[in-house]
Amino acid sequence: MDSLITAAAQALAAGDPLGAMKRVALRDDAPALALRGMAMAQLGDFVRAKALLRRASRAFGPKEAVARARCVVAEAEVALASRDLAWPTKALDAARATLEAHGDRRNAAHARYLGIRRLLLIGRLDETEQALAETADVPLPPALLAVRELVVAGVAMRRLRTQPARRALARAVGAAQRAGIPALVAEVGNAARLLDAPAARLLSGGEERLLRLQDVEALLASNVLVVDACRHVLRHQGTAVPLASRPVLFALARLLGEAWPHDVSRSTLVARAFRAKHADESYRARLRVEIGRLRTALGVLAEVRATKRGFILAPRDARRIAVLSWPVEEAHAAVLALLGDGESWSSSALALALGTSQRTVQRALDALAAAGKAHSIGHGRARRWTTPLLPGFMTALLLPVPLQFD
Image (cartoon, rainbow, N blue to C red; front, side, top):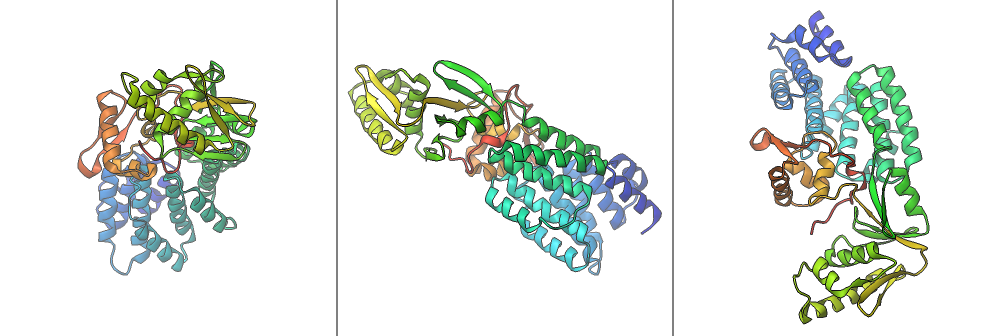
């Protein structure tokens, strides 16, 4: 490897893509193409980066298996950064195996953590924790150690374990500072700020206030029956009644929870849950049926009692009832929650992360674009979606995994 290639690689490792480009910008040999591709990725031009890395992979000879594998890993990193989560993971696994077989343990570890980060983004928390456990004793350089701790913190935050998340983020801060890569330091800092950002809005007894993630954790551990509108489930001290696949029942439960300790009229329930203009006898009959189903679903958590004008939700063992919702209510809050991380997402990646169809996500994106809340970049397969972070809006930490759309 010549001196310019070595210097460019060192500049990239230190987070200096412009310094790398100065050394290899006019070269078209395979190592230079690979380094140019990685530099373009660090500069945010993911389309150009992917094209350069594929050119480099083809330019390396059949005997240069390690170099080709490194290109595959770099392309996977570009895919992760551009939220192309449908990128073929088998190619990454094959590249990692090649790197391990040739003794390139550092890049093999990097490939492994790319796969783990993808699992976290699509909400496969059990698989993420298993993969982390399998690599717990592997020594890592500071940059990869920071990445590992970011994943550990991400899992802990999604599990609503804020103290382990804080400890992992503290370790990530130290590792990122030792690595000396500005982009990594910024990423860790952004993750740390999530713990103190508004995560949800609490409505109880006619009052409402914003909650941080640790407040949500404390609420779910308390003697409160929580109607969780973020994950479409009712919870009380470890007992959960999921209603994500039964939107009418959840709508009724939320209306009754928001009104507690008061009742809700039949006409209001019909209008809000069934979206009907007039509560005629057919709708009233349907309401009786759905209330009966809700009573059965709630089981030991609460009972639904009839009153003269409607119905009231009464907890069996809980001290009170509270509704947990997004800090900012939106028609497509789940999509906005993912876009809120500031990265550019493809519609296929959003569908994968939310566990729904790409067409459903595309309709949501079109509606958000028409309202000026999201915009697209690029065309065709390279099209990506992003949005400015809404004031007071959290990220995907409280999303159900996967989310069932109405």
